[in-house]
Image (cartoon, rainbow, N blue to C red; front, top):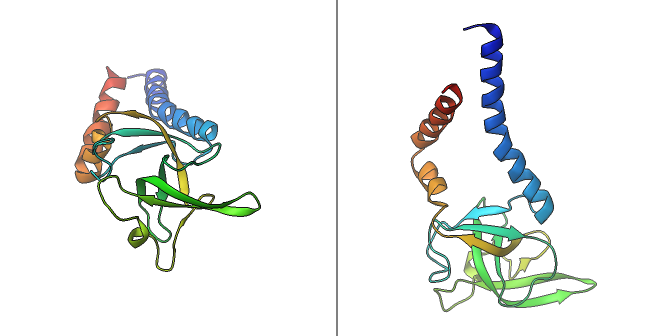
Length: 163
C-alpha cells in the first residue's frame, strides 16, 4: 500500500467517525442542551415511552405542567425522563419543577438529591422531549450492557472504510 492510499484510508476513517459527532454537537447547539438525544433506560414512562426508545430534546422556551423533561439528579451521573406535574417560581424567581413517573402514584422527591424538594429548571433540566423514535436506542443499551459490542462496532466501521 502506498503512502498516499494509506493517507486517504485514514482520512476516510476520520471523516466517518467525526461526522456523526459533529452532527450531534451541532444539534446540541441548536437545541441549547449538552445532550440533544437520549435513550430511555427503564420502563418508568410506559406506555408513552419504552426501554430503548430514542428521545429528541429541546431546551428553549417555557416548561409547562404536563411536559416530559429529562433531568439530572445533583451528585449523580444519570438522566431521568419524567413528566412535570407542578412548577414553582418563574419570572424574577428561579423556576423549579416537580416531576413524576407515569407508572407510579407518587412524585419523584425520593429520587432527588438529599434536601432537594424540586428540580431546578436552569441547572438540572437537560431538555423537554419533542420527538421520539421507538426502539432505536437499543443499540446504546447493548453497548452499555456489553462493552465488547463497542469494539465490534468500531471494527465494522473500520472495515467499511477499507472496503
